[in-house]
Amino acid sequence: MKSVIFLCALMLLPQSALAMHLSEGILPARWALLWFAAALPFVAWGVVQINRKKRLDPAYIPLLGIFGAAVFVFSVFPIPVPVAGSTAHPAGTGMSAIFLGPFASVVVAFISLLLQALFLAHGGLTTLGANTFSMGVMGSFSAFGAYLLCRKGGLSLFWCGFAAGVSADLVTYFGTSFALASALHGTQPFLSVLGQIYLAFMPTQIPLALLEGAVTGGLLVYVQKHRPDIIGRLGLFQGVKG
Image (tube, rainbow, N blue to C red; front, top):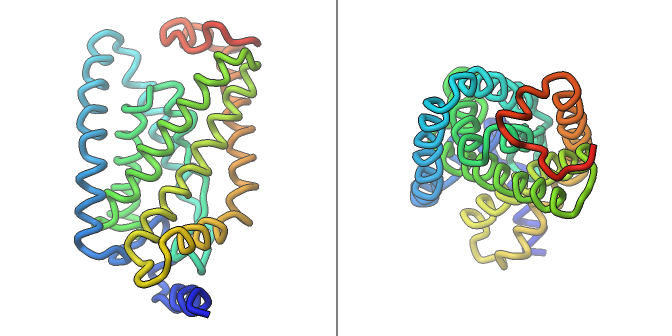
């Protein structure tokens, strides 16, 4: 019964809670600050790595811009999930983590989320740390890990990208669910609330994850066929079947 009351309370949150990502004001101040503290070291080290790669390869910056735009576009189309107090959307960090590296992908996600919060009322400034950690940190590193694992397993290029795209998407929403459950579970068991919120995303998120996986895998195959110069510079596909 308490779980039902909790879910009903989330559904009755103001409409701003249906804004893109975790919306402004949904997290208490101490949780908002905690997520900023968790995300900022990854953003800072990502900036260091971007500057380092820029000095080694001037073509890295245009590549950064391309995938920054891709992440922005991927994550800017909301599908409301009223029970969860957020929206469902693709992440895009699977492809950016593969091509740019996971730390640079965190920076890309941070900038994308900041622009959306400032100009599109998607997400919020107080929740920027939590959104960056879930989509940027968790999404990027889980995608990169899935990609490397599939490479070592000898899977084809498409399936390496597919695994990265699916992982980025589903792990991002686990992070979002974790942030919501941590801050809002109250007297309810944390794991129970976490499971309820995460499951609330799944009807929309599983199809989106599969779609994002297919797009990421297809993009890798396309780049391998049509822009092998990028592949050679980044050394992405060594040991991967075609």
